[in-house]
Image (cartoon, rainbow, N blue to C red; front, side):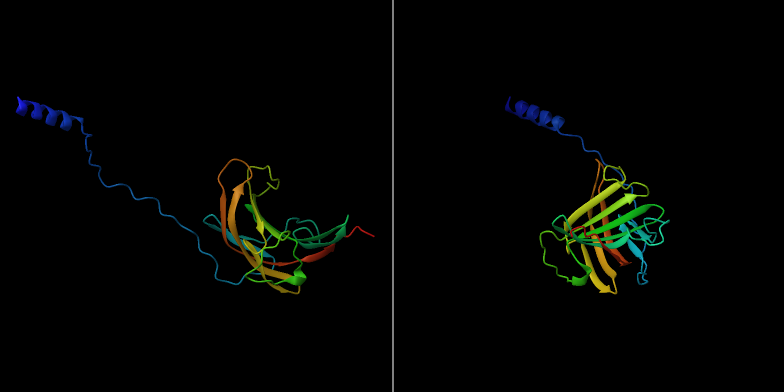
Length: 200
């Protein structure tokens, strides 16, 4: 009787086990490629970087009709309504993307400053990337990030208002969607100074 009972338990246990299925060799995952970054020095008037895994070079200014590119590469300064303006704009585009770099609260006269750069309230840097033609923050083809100056954007040289530096960061999508990683970013932009003073 005991032997029959043990045999019954053994059969029940074995029949309740999950079946083991042997799977053959799996397919290889797709190869992950990054196109090569140029080894040549960056030219004046250029922003270049990896956007995810694609290396892009952007040389066109924002406006192709103005004789002086005062919005794409400028330093806005001056006192107005009791506040002081200090903003550096560096913007370039190609056939696919526009990269916009904004540095607030920093004067080119204090550059280069670092690295390392002390994080100071009011000194920030913003990286924006948009698909060609999508410049509004609500557009689906728009990504952005904002942080203290010196964290994701830094100017390493200022020679006669030609600003050279680097940038990188994880950008969020403006609408629900996939973010974007920008890496190995470089810029070399000649800025134009523009007095925005309105106080007497």
